Image (cartoon, rainbow over all chains, first blue to last red; front, side):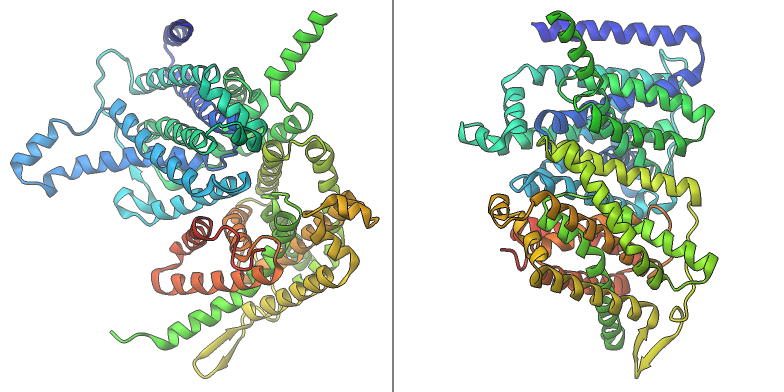
Length: 334
Length: 291
């Protein structure tokens, strides 16, 4: 019941944001907005594993790229249908292909979830650090695979042309923004629902003391696998519309370091203990970076993110949300 | 098609030389991650800093990169002790090393890389020394000095480290600190001090490894990231905290990578380390010589 109310409220907020931006009539706002909202999804997805269970994933960029490249693969297949199949089959397939973006998002989610599950299955029975290291290595290896895979463009990249005609939306960027906004609402609803469920309490028990949790009958491995699968799926879903958004995709942009660092820095700076933290962190840092990208250089703005991350993990372990909560609590006890 | 025996033997020898170098790169991680339980993923960043320092002195003063690195090692040692002190006070003391400690090192890795990009750009940099270029030839076997000199220097460094760890009181205390801190205190050794020394030592090896790296190949700021998977794969494969295991695993990885690069192309080489890592984690998480 409460989850339904939360969903309706956030949907209303999303609609207000969307129509607010639309009232300006500037296409660039949707481009900048898309990047920020995409970070909300990535940060929330990272936090389900990192913040709730305490397992660090350094490979967000890899999962994001898995989503992006699963879309590229399906889009490329669509252009080859006539060469591969006989006429009758091709005609049948062409009624489905090219797949609409929401379908691409779902497929990306399945692929990302499977990879997350596999990674978790191999490494989560061991100490936490192994998982973190394996995710780091995963990014390098998936990038190697994509670079060597000519079908999706290899190292030189591939062009992805977005359809020109839209029904309701004025431009394609606007459509992608609306879609990503909807995904952000979805991920926040999922994150909040987890927090207040049996699953969430299990996650918290793992984070606080895994041995004690295991001893009290919490199925730790299964819960951790749920977290890695869900988190991987959501990250890949965030990456699925990326090829259409950027128009020209190459491994260095899909596996960009900014995704790995931002999806860790945003929850850490916002606060990892609740769904609000990644949201606050992503909106704050995302907006800051969009402004810095225009005014200063993009390297300097990544430097700022890195320094903020270091400063926050040292002096504010529970992020901005934690600082605000402490302030409120102190005022109440006065 | 005949099996190209000569090519194969040369690939194996190149792999052996590469493996020796990997041992120097991994020795620091073997101490910090293997013995101290500090997941220092920023280690490759310190290695790249070592490379750039060797580069600066080599270009401006014409000094030999390896000699520069040995001179710079004490400075890295002090830097390492400072980093550990921050890490200890901010995370280890509060029991938050697993999540926030990792994020801290990730931040350090990232900031170092971005600063290097801002200062030196993303161009590849290289050094000049007499042993870069000539190759020793024995029949069909090629021994490029560019690989041989770093390999020998790495093995010297590795042997010195091994002697220090196994033969001195401080060295043995380093091995003991991850096992039983209480017992170490009974031996009148302060665990925090021992860890500080060991971490300083692990960063000091990064100075040398960095200089060897820039002798072997031209570098740019993000090269370090390729080494993260590699060094941790070696460290886990060798068995955490076992220096002899680290050496065996380094050479194994070097040979397999070299053969892969020779027969399938260099763009596949980074995937080898990851394959090793996953197989080890799946089948023998305690490593080859794990305790």
